[in-house]
Amino acid sequence: MTHLFRLHDALFSRIERADWLLPTIARLLFAAILLKYFWVSGLTKLGGGIFSPSMGAYAQIFPRAMEAAGYDVSQMSVLQTLVVLAGTWAEFILPALIVLGLLTRLAAIGMIGFIIVQTLTDLYGHGAIEEATTVGAWFDKMPDSIIMDQRALWIFLLVVPVFRGAGPISLDRLVVRSVT
Image (cartoon, rainbow, N blue to C red):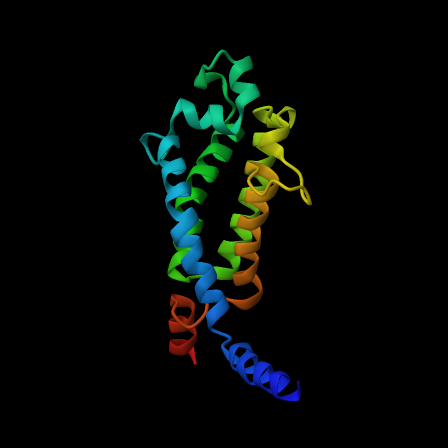
């Protein structure tokens, strides 16, 4: 039995020393799973350019306000337009920063905030809170609800670079090396 414990310790002590592995895998998985999702979502919000959001952008971000305005974008406030622009740009900029490994911790915190706002908008703005299968529940037998299960995993994937940084294959590492 002692031999088994020694083997276990020898194997896993090497893995524990591989500090670069976890943040690198987290960024790779983010790129593989979520990068295109957010970029395609951002593209749906572009109207005539990066400074003119589409009507769909307002409808996605402010669904009830757009419905109340009869889907007339001209009735939306300047603040609502700024929020829509910021949300649209965030869907392009933050994922790109995470994948490139540039300002990774800040970008990951920004994406976590974005996902929280996205989730609250889906729940309360779009009425998903009324759909039990969409919302789901933790500690149940179904691991595929869009809100509770998937978004929790997305956030966990982003928590890794918040605490561990971007890893060695990143622009953050190049910047640190060039500064020191």
